[in-house]
Length: 142
Image (cartoon, rainbow, N blue to C red; front, side, top):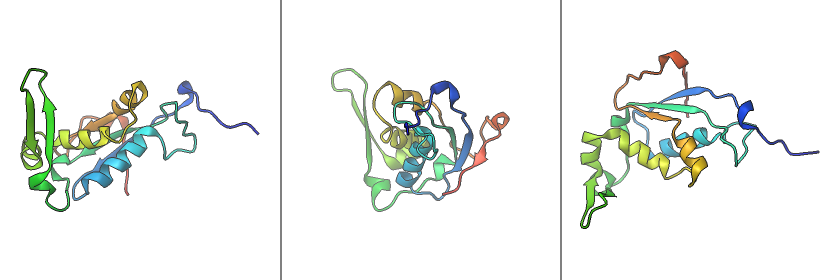
């Protein structure tokens, strides 16, 4: 018996919506990364993008445990000498709450072209509204 291998043109993609309100950041990110990769589907193939689209709303209301709210630091570099910029979780959540979830999910995706292609199917919104109603997303509970 031969193993099943999904072909890219045979994959049917669905849209799921996840409410981040009251969810823990790491658990939310791992569940999202799993959906984006397609690991929840019976046709999962590691070298093919079999994942679905994910919309995350209420990103500003995501929770973290312990002292992470005041001590977790996000770093980036501008590309110029001495251009290392650091921002604490609390300030980043106040200014750009979507970036926190994007950063967490991106760290759980595979590196390379395929991972970047899968990552593009993630849509994150700070508030409760989104602009993907035409796709008729289903609610994902976990």
